[in-house]
View 1 (cartoon, one colour):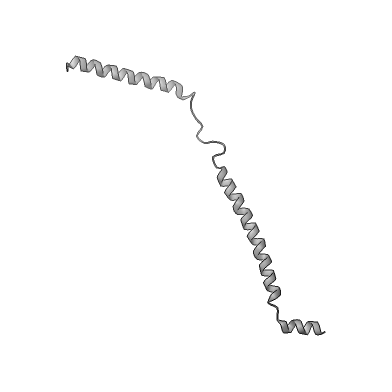
View 2: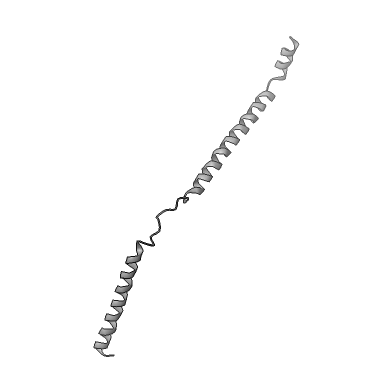
Length: 85
């Protein structure tokens, strides 16, 4: 291949690439997307709410179970003496 033809081909390719880059730079401000979406962290909020109410329910449940165990662990002899008076 002739060096002048090769140089002309390379210069045309470079010009086309530069024109594409210039065209895309003009449109980048128009098509720019925001860095984050407004509801990007919604699943963290849902997870937090679920964990909060799970903790609340388990606390109430275990408190109820412990109170029942405390009543059932009373000494039967002590109950008999209290009922006798």
